[in-house]
Length: 179
Image (cartoon, rainbow, N blue to C red):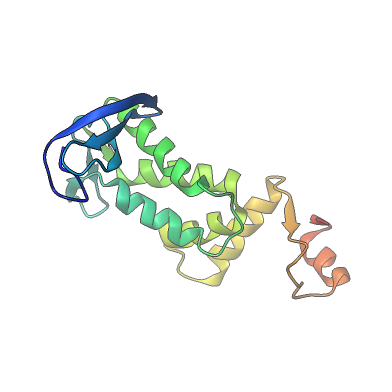
């Protein structure tokens, strides 16, 4: 293992601990005595994604993470929620035991989890994933989300775009204020 400080290849392991998906090792360089941490993770067999246009490409977690982050951009989500969501999807994909999965399978997994995590992120992702062609498709998806009994919550520090009486009329009384 190369030392990130002096590039020496001589180091010793001071401490090892199991982490969720591998091993964390604390090392000390024998040359400069600096300490650094490394993570070891088992790489599962390759997984291919069958795209809509019949192409096949390697599964890339970074690409999945970028799409989820784009949908969750500027949303008040707990720290690490997006990374955990991507990790969970990656684990589930490898647990399927298939060498190839469709992009639809991955998209559906993301949609299912985003629906539970954040309604706005879900709609953002759905608008790209389902390729809404006009506003009626988007409205239909929002209506489906509200009709499923999903509670629409307005953040206490966010200003409303409409007066309360108009909001209740438009949402059928589903809107609930958080204090």
